[in-house]
Amino acid sequence: MKIGPAGVRVRITFNGELIADSRDAVRLDEGDYPPVYYLPRKDVKMERLIRTSHSSHCPHKGDATYYSLSNGRTARNAVWSYEQPLVQVEAIKDHLAFYPDKVDSIDCS
Image (cartoon, rainbow, N blue to C red; front, side, top):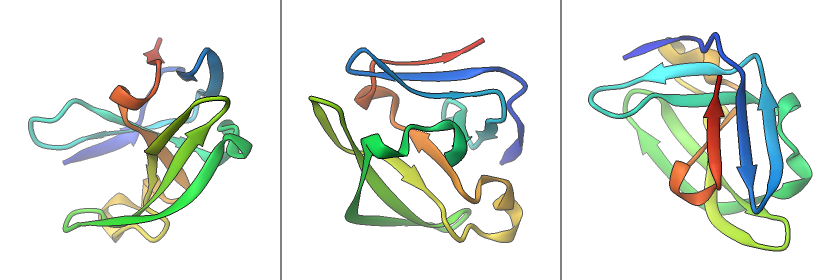
């Protein structure tokens, strides 16, 4: 696992609306998976997120909480966050990640 500053601007669009726009994203590379970008909450339209009761556990990152996106359309559990991540991934604390198949786009430039 490799974690560090993304070094790019990350923009996330959902239902035609820019939901997140950050130059402070954290990139996490894990195994054979595509990189995941975690964006600070300050750069996300939090009013478009609804916390759900869904949760999961990763032995490398800790316990994840989930949010649905809603802005005229709803995508359930489209966003996740590690609010108390394990020490080796502390950089993702208070950050959010988005499932690529539940948003219109994740643009990194």
